[in-house]
Amino acid sequence: MKIKVINPNTTMAMTKGIEHAALSAARPDTEILAVSPKLGPVSIESFYDEYLSIPGVLEEVKKGQEEGADAFVIACWGDPGLQAAREVTDKPVVGIAESSIYLASMLAARFSIVTVLPRIKTMIEELVDSYGMHRRILNIRTTPMGVLDFERDPEKGLELLRQEGKKAVEEDHAEAILLGCAGMAEFADSLEKELGVPVIDGVVAGVKFAESIVDLGKKTSKLKTYKYPEKKKYIGVLDSFGSEEVSIN
Image (cartoon, rainbow, N blue to C red):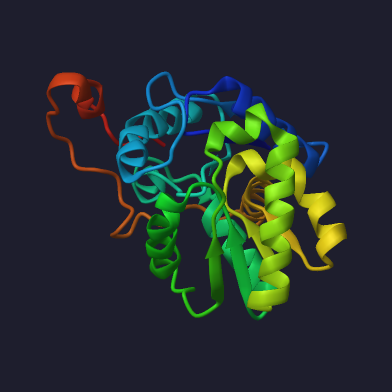
């Protein structure tokens, strides 16, 4: 099977790290196609960034069907464009935040999230609430580092994650830790050994869920909510999104 993993930001160094994490989890017979969109922000750390990343994500999902993708993983912890992406394909589309949260709920009764800048805490709170998991989350812990800072200084990033992860276990009584950024994948195994609880990287979780859904032969429901978008005209920079045939199988 082929799984297309979409990093919604345009920083290729981060996409390479995401690809490495995806390959480490995928079965030998699973092909991983890791990409960044041609348009979008270099990192996603605000609602503004998130919303502007969505057209690029949708473009990559549409391209993925021509590339023979069997499933898609949106590799940003805000799951930008996830619901819309499910409208433009009948292939499974999973988000790494969604996958992390659902996996954690099978492994632990209560868990905490450790992520990047404080400003995204509200974004994550709203996301968790939308998945109906707010009662399972004990705390959302942030660090002073941005998304790309973890790429530039992974040693400092690991130390901050270690500190916040330890607080999550000792103070929150978290029974599992979710790493709230796709750029944190390389730290999961070492943190799990140190903290003594499951530490979940969303890219790995997303790939395994995508593989499982494809193996089960399931597709995205087109009955109502996720049916293909109605044909209509879009103008300006969004002109290509109003294509003559929106429904792509």
